[in-house]
Length: 159
Image (tube, rainbow, N blue to C red; front, side, top):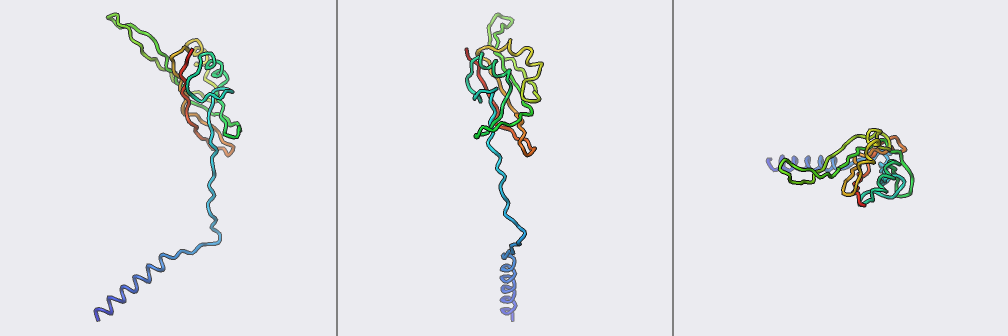
């Protein structure tokens, strides 16, 4: 009698497992299509500079133009804003007369695709070889109305 109860329990469990493993596909379910976001890169001005070494003259010239964002096909996208940071290397002297090179940092959020007026009024007089400019948190508007954030830019100024 115990064997019959045991085998009937095993049979019920096996039958229940088999039913739960079967899934019915509904006709109204369509496979989800992946919406591919194009690979967008940001560039300085109308150039192909997206980071690395850049001459002071080129940096000043292209920074005045602002940022552009485009995909691999050359389609342009609207830049909604970015964080501009600038590391200016300066030579200082401590109280004992020892010279030391220190970096002063300037950082500001810039709405739109160009630097804010506060930065534009004095940055072009400050730039010199050895300084570093960072452009991060770039916001690019897609045609769908969503925003995406391409990779940031880092420039080291040279002569």
